[in-house]
Image (cartoon, rainbow, N blue to C red; front, side, top):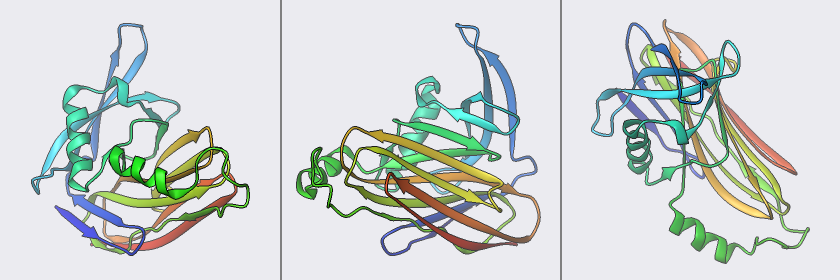
Length: 229
């Protein structure tokens, strides 16, 4: 089951897929002897249903995992492409992705042609004036959704007049579930990134949602309320 909520400047998306178990994990060891957690969960299908998708994760601690796109299976890579394409985007494969307390997480960005076209006209090239305006827009979803896996989405649009990182985090239920991505830029930048966190809620109640993004000189955030029914 999937629900969409669109907002001015920043868009928020939530999809729900009810199931008894939010995910299943198994352990694999790769050719280098590294331990990988292979997590299988239900995710929204671009055709309107749900499907089972794996994410191969590097475990940091009991609830924190790093998602590395380069070690995913062909099926997972294809799903990521289809998922982003449904929203007119491409997978965000650069930077660092961290899942904490969540079932899964996904990141998307504008297609390359749009990014290059925007960069040419933005005036925020490397070496741009220090007086350029820095800003961050972010928003969190609100609404009413069924019990199950909630795919909570946030969009961050940001401009920085100096080099450094852009971080974007979508979270739900007082931060119990979060998915974060961080990208580093060698010069001034203007970017538009979107992240989704899959958070399981097993009973009807109210939870909050939050989207936060930061550039070196500025942060932006927003909160929302989701009714789980």
